[in-house]
Length: 97
Image (cartoon, rainbow, N blue to C red):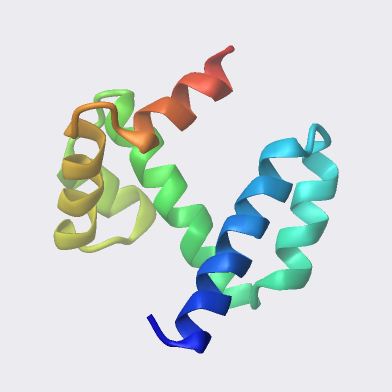
C-alpha cells in the first residue's frame, strides 16, 4: 500500500480506538457534528435509523416510507444485519445493554 493509503488506514484505526474509549455520548455527538458536514451526519443518522427499524421487524417498504430511503439502501442494511457476527447487530446489542 502506498504511503497515503497507510496514513489513511492508520488514521482510521486511531479514530476507531478513540471512539471506543469515549464513555460520554455528548462528547461523541459534539465530535461527530464537528467532524461531519450536516449532510454527512444526516446520512449516518438515517443509516443507523434504518438498521434499528429492520432489527425491530419493520418492513422494508414501511422503512422506505418513514425514512424516505430507497429499497436498495434498505436491502443493503438488511444484508449487513444478517451477516454472521454482524457489526451492525453487535452495535445494536450495545445500545440495549
